Length: 200
Image (tube, rainbow, N blue to C red; front, side, top):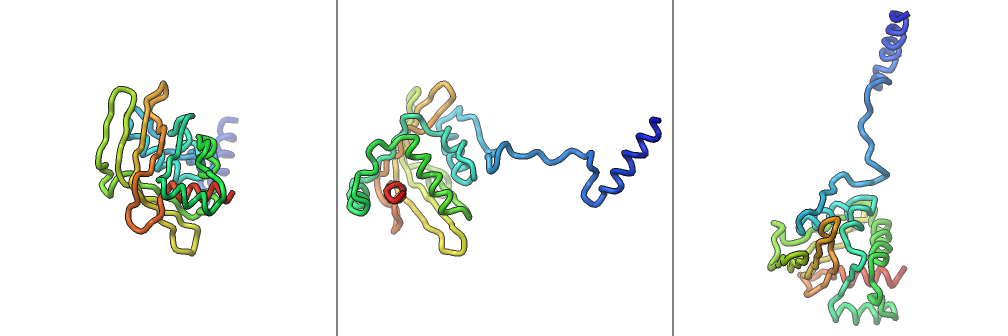
């Protein structure tokens, strides 16, 4: 009987050889479509940037959204706020919280499904200035966002911002993105996110 079972299993593997034996372990699936596997426990404030970069690239929003606080705020430059209000007819930055950020993030991922990337700091990941005191931290530096929607030229966003962090029971999270200045000929995230929210 054991010999018969062995032969049955052996023949089944031979028949499936082109695609691999049916009893071979499969490659592990990521948990949920587009769920990112690059999440790091944010034991240090700077790890939040890595998790945001990972979550922005991914199809899923989880790494990005758990990297920002419930009281998250987006604060644009005054010039950008004025331009956005003039174009969309209302102050879309009022009440900008975690839910507003997720709605804009989801829309951007739909509009730019081909590829998205964000870099915090300069090309070497360095910031102009930073401070970490107890459970609060901030970083000041440039950022670069590249959005691709397919065959078209990518859209580039860049600026200089203050990134505010706080440490909670689950580790560090970002509490506020505060645009400070432009960086080259590109629109800022504050401007682009505002236009996106205003047009939705």
